Figure (tube, rainbow, N blue to C red):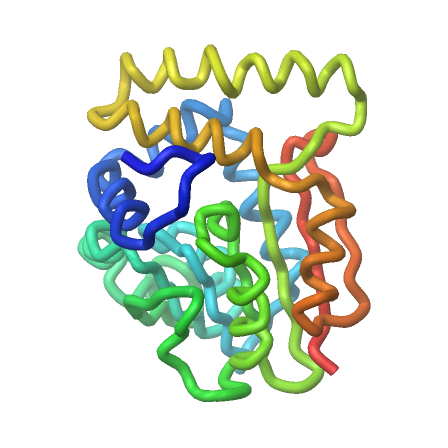
Amino acid sequence: MARADLDKRPGDVAAMFDAIAGRYDLLNDILSAGQVRLWRRAVARITGAGLGERVLDLAAGTGTSSLTFTAAGADCVACDFSLGMLMAGHAKLGDGSRRAGRGQVGWAAGDALRLPFRDEAFDAVTISFGLRNVADPGAALAEMRRVTRPGGRLVVCEFSTITIAPVDMIYRRYLLNILPAIARRTASSAEAYEYLAESINHWPDQRELAGLIEAAGWSAVRWRDLSMGVVAVHVGRRE
């Protein structure tokens, strides 16, 4: 098991997610006290994808997040490097069209550092709770820019830093102590959630991440805090 303070080897991270694919969505609901559903809807609103647009949903896992885009009529490619996640999602959702509105979900296995798509292929690229698992986030952000059309948009939803210091301190204790304890009782691979807690704890705050996005070539970068900063949604535009 690769820990958060070690190199994030793609094979190790993919295997970790393969191991929890079957119960991933259920455990996300439990461990976030249902907040993950609100965060997904917020990302969809901020992305604003509509009929006729193409969205790339990176680190899509089982594709649950992708359905929020197809519900508004956009077509969405759910891309992940965990084959276990993609297989679980495709078995459950298929193309997603009948459940999610007019848009369709496509499925693709791919590494965020070497995306299997042509230049300027998408109107919007999103990644939710996945950027911190990439070995080189800056390079991944540049690769996302490559596959986004001029004028297109980036939306990054990631765990962040609560802006009220005493509340953030309590939250960090939850991450490092309580969340792994819950996972040990409910998950078949509790080590995966220990890794996830550590990766959240080591992740840059809102301003640092905005700087990383700008350095990758995105413009008009800004962010919005959700749940007091437990999660932040960063947006950018490709000129």
